[in-house]
Image 1 (cartoon, rainbow, N blue to C red):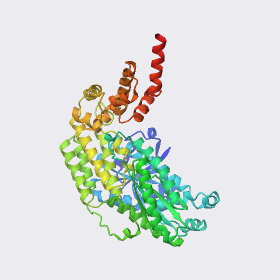
Image 2 (tube, rainbow, N blue to C red):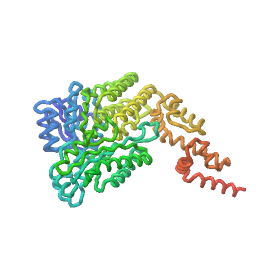
Image 3 (cartoon, helix red, strand yellow):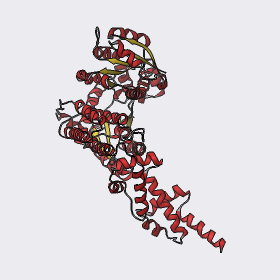
Image 4 (cartoon, rainbow, N blue to C red):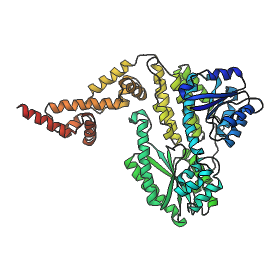
Length: 536
C-alpha cells in the first residue's frame, strides 16, 4: 500500500482530491493532509509517505521550498505538483528540483488523477531501490563486488559521494578511465513497420548483447552503467586502464564494428559518444560532465561525438513548450481536428527550428499522448488513440525521431477525429475484403489503409482491438490458409507457392506457415501426399 499525503491551502480542494477517486483500488492510502508547507514538512518527516500531492502557492512555506527541503532530506518521496495555468511558469522549476509530475487543478478529474498516480508508483519503487543502497551497505557491496549498484548513482544529477568514488578507485576502476555511450536509432517508429512496442523491447535486449560484446572486444576493462530506470535509447559504459595513446583509435574501430554488426542483425543505427580519458579519481566528475554534454548534443546533432565536441556552445530555446501542449490538449478535448493539426504542426516546426533538450520534447509528447488516451474515447473503444504512441517514447533518442513520432500522432489523431463516433466494423470489413481479394499480392498496411481512406495507425489499432489479432497476423493467417488450399489442390513446389502468395522469400514463408500450422510446408505436403496414397 502506497502512503499518500495531500497538501493545499484550500480545504475544499483537499476534500475534493481526497474523495475524487477510490484510492484503495489503486493500492494507495491517504494518510494525512496539510494546509501549508510547514505543516506538510512536519508530517512528511514523521510519516515518510511514498507520494505527496502538493500545491505550489501556499502560505508560510510554498510548494517549491517544501519540495526542495524534502528532496534533500528524503529523496525517496515522490512529489506531484498541483498548479493553475497562471502558475505554470513554476512547473519547470519544480521539475528541476526532482518533482516527478504535475496536475492542472482546472483539468483534474478521476481519470487524470488515477493515471498520474499509476505513473508515480514505478517511480516510488525505483527510488526505494536507490535508498536501499545507503552507506551502511557499502562494506557488503565492496565484499560482494556489486560495484554496479554504485555506478547507478552516476546517472543521478548530484555528484557522487567521495566514499563511493573511493571504492571505485580502490578497485582500480578510475585508472585512466572514460565514459562511452552508445546511442540507438531504431527503425522507423510507426505502425507501418509492423513493429509493436514489445518488438522494440526485444530489439533493445538483443542490441544490448551485441553492444556489450563489441565493447568487451575493444576494451579489456569495462562495466555497463544501468540507471534506476533503463535508457532504452542508449547504453552507457565506464571503461578503465585505457592506454592514452590508442584510446581514439580503439573508439573509432569499436564504432565501425558496432555499426556493421547492428545494421546487419537488429537494423538499429548506432552512434558512439566518448569522453576524454581521465588519469585520476578526481577526474570522474569532469568525465561525467562531458558525457552529459555529449548526450544533450547528440539529441540535436545525431552523429558520433567525442571530447572535442564538448566545446561547442549550445543555446537552448527560451520559448517553453507548455503553451503548445495546452492548446493541443484543448483541441483534443474539443474534438477539433483542424486545431489538432494546426497546433501539432506548430509544435513540430518549433522543435525542428529551435533547440530543446530531449526531456523537454519527451515531456510534450508524453503529455499529449496521456491526454489523448483520456480525452479521445468513444462508446466503441476504451481509448481512441492506442497505447503504441506512448509505449515507444522511451526508445526515442533524437530530435528527428520525436518529430516523426509527432507526425504519426498527428495523422492518427486527425484520422480518429474524422471517424469519431462512427462504427468501426465497416473499416474492418473493408480491410478484410482487401486482404482476400489481393491474397496473391504483397499486402502492406499503409496501402490497405490508404485504399479504404484511413491512416495506417487507425487501421492497426482498430483491427487489433476488435479482431484480437494484429492486421499483419490476419494477413499471414489468410495467406497460410490459401497456401494450404493450393497444397491440397496439387501444388507441391514451395518456391511456386511463396512467390504466388507475395512472400519475399521461402524462409519467411516457412516461418509463417510453421507458426500457424505447427509444421513446415515440406512436412505438410508430405503428409498430404501420404494421405492421398492411402486413399488410393
